[in-house]
Image (cartoon, rainbow, N blue to C red; front, side, top):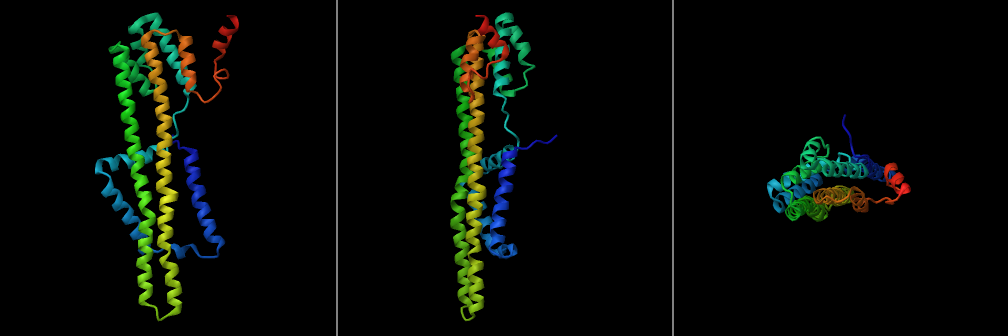
Length: 267
């Protein structure tokens, strides 16, 4: 079953609907804004800028990341914490052998890979260095993907103005006809609208969305790294829970499980 990020799809629909409603409210037929010359200049120019400013392989990664934006965020940090707590209990009870057998069954791929690595390399400093390097690289890659669309969004309005200038030059050639001049000026400024719309309704929002999704992903991965390092160090599950709950945006007291609340009440 296909799942989509509801907020992203809703945002696109609302932006498009609002733009069309604004055009209709002026009494202008939306087909008036279908100007091939302006579209060719703005779309072609913006794509050309992306090719100039971004290496081909990086550009492919940037477009692939757009497809990932439509998938819903993983979420479920509370469930992830409980899974790490369970791994910590198994590790304390059965050692590395039990942890390795459990790690294979973990559903979260990042947590699974981190636990498998921890079973092979039982050294806190080496693991921490490896995890931090991976996090830094993921952050860099995500920032590079976002910057691809930020750069294109910065150039799109200017390219739209270029299209407008081209349209005005064509108007000047027909200056003898007042009717044609008035129509031509209106048509020329459509290129500016194309550039502004492409930048502010598509390119820049995509860049911001990539950074927002990247921030959520890195936060989850930092939670996993902290939890796995605690498991390696043999930290008590209760202390691991206290550490990992600091990653939650909800009240830590409200996010405690019934089991942990019962233990606290008994104590």
